Amino acid sequence: MNNVNGKTRIALALAVAAAWAFVGDVSRAQGPSNPTVAYHIDFGQDLNLMLNPNDPVAQHYAMWKTPIQYASLRSAPFIRITNDATSAMQMHSVRIDFGDPRFMFDSFAFFEQPDDGVATITSHSDMAFMGDMKPFLQVEFPQGLNPGDSFTFQVRIANTATGQLADYENSLWQKDFSMIGNRDDNGLVSVVYKDALGGVPTEFAMTPVRFFEYGLVNNLYGTDANGASGTSMVMQSMHDMTLIGSERFSQSAVVAEPSSLAMLAVAGVVCPYAAYRRRRRRAA
Image (cartoon, rainbow, N blue to C red; front, side, top):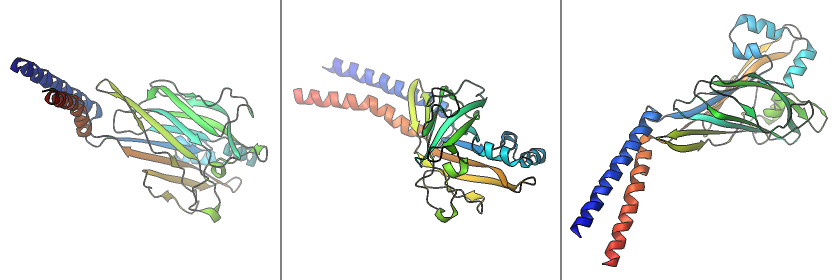
């Protein structure tokens, strides 16, 4: 009996050592304590201005557009998704749902693929104008979007109630000054991160959040309870006396600390052993 207990203790010690080795791998993979997953999404009707918002040359050329160019680009905004995580976790999917059933995502075009892989828009089977329209946009990163990397594309938005192209601010932000503060029919963003911590696949789904109400009178949106915030840059067009600019929406969340993962790893070893001991006592 003592020999059996001795073997069990040795096995438990080896298992706990292996668990702590796993914890060490997780800690090294996650880096500093309290790592975060975070991203930002830029929207704009001028790609060069969106990428270089403080460049006076980019501002000049963005403002000198004809009304027809302006209306066309506002129905087909440029969108840039960037992974800002301070952990090593990769972004694997981004979904944007319209909160208003009148609007649909239509054709799209890629402008910048990630440096470390590819991105796909899986919600649409074709890129034809007024073709495969959907009330949501699903972006996938099969190889993961690493921290610091971005994906840029352009997508057309249609208003099915009128059969016309839609303004991206009105469809995603519901830019109605009489309804400021009401986010119920704004676009909804859902982001999923994945990683292999210590060789164990993990998934972190951020809380889905709605875009902020877009008010031209307010340049900065406060952070809400789900870690979402936004900013806008608006300029007066010199050519056609309209407004032009770009918006940035961001969200961040804290992922599990290495210490929390450590407790889970050790519990996974100790709990089965404790159950085994209880069964042996009952049998005795």
